[in-house]
Length: 153
Image (cartoon, rainbow, N blue to C red; front, side, top):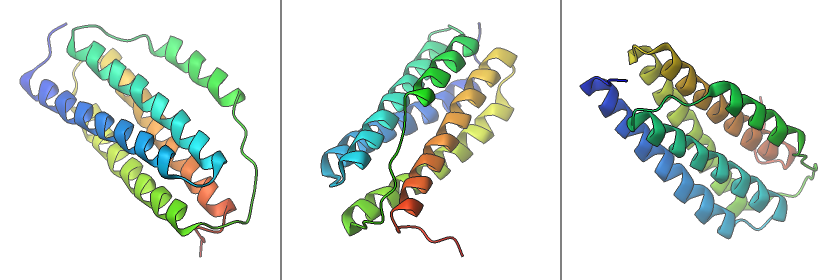
């Protein structure tokens, strides 16, 4: 598989975004007060590491198997549950707000990258990552809403 220069640049950008997400989730898991939030940040950080691995595979000329990733994702989702609580912690709220904003940005950059790739399988792999980024945002949003940190008006 041959990547164009533009595709390589886009992958470099996505790689740096994934590395930033991994750092944020790791740091914020250590800072979070709520054990449930710590667990959520750890879980999402692990998924960001999988995204980075996928980007590195593509950059090394390998096309990842999206079907296998989707099966793993379904198993991970079945193993997760979140409890509801009305407790609000401002520090945790700030961490969540930052990560939700980060996920929105990263998802948008994947959207741009997807349209620039010529290989259908790479587009599918990037689309799969983008979908997971959106799911990360949804999980953070749901946590925030259930803990009184995000009010939909």
